[in-house]
Amino acid sequence: TSEDLASWTSRYSNSVSILGACFGAGTFIATRADGTLLAISDAGSWHDPQQNVGTAVLNDLAFLNGQFVGLNYERFIWSSNGIAWTTTPAPTNTGNLFNITYGEGRYVAGGELRMVWTSTNGLDWINPSTNLSSYPYSSDVRVAYGNGVFVGAAGYRDILTSDDGVDW
Image (cartoon, rainbow, N blue to C red):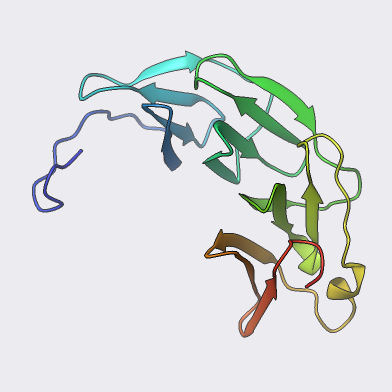
């Protein structure tokens, strides 16, 4: 942790790599390479909020729309407090999902083969722009939302944009 971004204090050390972290609801959550989640709500010690949430290594962990969301190619995990987690399946035939964002009342997940998946409730997912994944465009997509625009970065040179997360 750091208060000034110049001086840092180690708060956790382990032989398993930390892959990502996010903050929300007064809590930091980190994901490890073994699928374990860690939590901290102050400058104290990290603790394991739940040893196994039924998922493999997460590709992304974020705090979106008032809840923590993690994902990989087969499922999503959800928590309002970072301690109790529920699991929902990813849509079938998605390939690997890499990250997730939220805006304009919908979740948008970026994945393999230039696929973008959307959902208004986190349970029912569609791939509204199947033309994005046509040859020769087979690169992976990472998505973000800000200032009223969804942005997807695909491959080495393509930037995709959408006002609603559906039409790209």
